[in-house]
Image 1 (tube, helix red, strand yellow):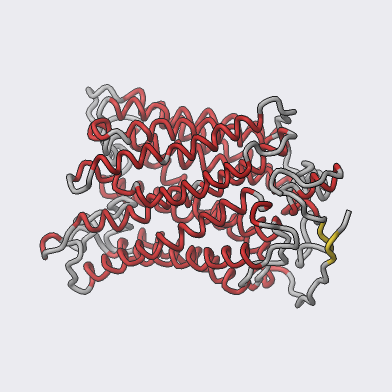
Image 2 (cartoon, helix red, strand yellow):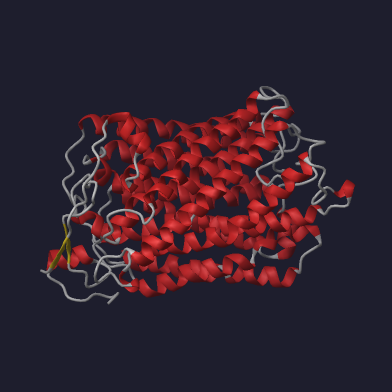
Length: 542
């Protein structure tokens, strides 16, 4: 088998904490992304437990209404802006250069800058709890007039600056990914031999570049409204609050795919490996990913059906239409596993959790695409259920699948399978116990973002069940964290390729050297390691 020999560049020797603080190695930066993201995941989870504890029974028992508003706003903001988006970028940072046979990202110093903006943004956002008036409290959507200075304090200004920093980080990262993917592929790695995760990172980067500047402009306008007498969104001074909704959702609906496409890529790498089959419909999967990216810019106003300011038939049609490429992917995943030699290791379990939970999230979202149904369900707990089935049942399950899959590559050690399965079972049960009752609560009319409800509304038992489920999700993190701790200290040695993977990251040592590869196998398909292992010729992606 022909190989491509690589000459490692000379590296400056740095050790310990200084190395981690100053590194431009994409692998270390990817790990820093993961650690930072899980830190904010824990903080956001603690806030969620505060919200669920307050809602377990009627009556204000633990939180004042103002504090409750800060808790649910900061929970959503931390989970979306500082967990889901960065953690997926962290996986892409680590594996994309390895998957395409590159020695690093195209712009290593910009890559480091992209990361270090995130902890700064998180500190700024959370520091709102320390200032007069408290943290941002108008929801993660920051709608006017609630977000105007007359109704909110300094915490909202800190929130605006933090989200602007996060957006700048995303834009720099997106440019870096695009240049890396287009200009630094190994010999033989044509576009239709790229792993699916690389394709999802590519489409995600395009979405970030096209959508994030729109949100940034809106944030700057809102900051001017609040601090310099502007009147963009303040109706009292001649502004238009609906303009904010258009600007915000033009970013935030494509952002839903920014938050899930790379998770889809993770699952698309795991299923073929643990099914011992190639991914069914490789090219169809690529075109479906591109279609999701394109259609993602045509559906933002379905969040605004009840405003009376959008053309309902068009946005309803486009919302139904965007389900088609997602459905293509779902059938491709199922066909990949069909009659495969399934190995029920922890990465596969979390991938299956992704498929089932994301399917529910997609179906309950399709109901809301119907205008009359959306009028009834808008701003109820049905929407909360939908959001969490897509972004927790989808993205977060995909994230944990990726952790269990690539931890051996990152650390050189295996995670404990028993603890991993305990983590999955408790988290799966807790997740459904938390969010499935919210469908019923929404259908029975419970509004979202309320701190209290009537004891006679009939919502008591379902809210108590959801709260118990929330604490189960929190409990599921304990075996996960313990698993990471003991595995790093003395876990089973992984070897270079413990799963018999298909893609190039498994062609180097675990963990990889700073320069990634000593040599590369001949690339004849989208599964170069499978080809090398079995002496195959050109594959489906040739």
